[in-house]
Length: 165
Image (cartoon, rainbow, N blue to C red; front, side, top):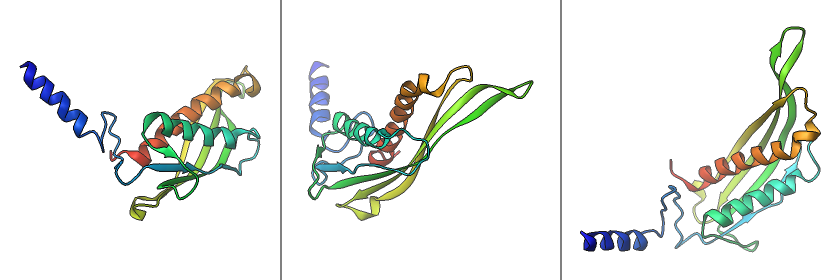
């Protein structure tokens, strides 16, 4: 039994070149580098530094969850992003024309370019929101809201680019 487990472990190590337990499907023999272009901000009312933050968050996500290396010269895959929506809306109406919750929504348009296999490229919108009490001002929750939204969007972008699920 011990011998079987050792062989199983060795097999997993040998065949982990393309797949991991997360379901990532990157062919590390052909795709070795990535680049994330500085995002563009086309959304009204967005923080001035939001575009840079989202681009950096995506770089960090790829760096920590894959073996790809950041390279701005002839990368194997590229990401281009534009912030297209950043707004607060009223949710959960209450009697008397007030609301219990406000919702910050951020939407990005992402282009994924696979320079090794053009058929795998795509353009998609990714959006997420953060609800907060209407008794709170956006500025008091904005850092937490942007962090929560960014974390979810980066997970969604990463999964769209690197999983076959």
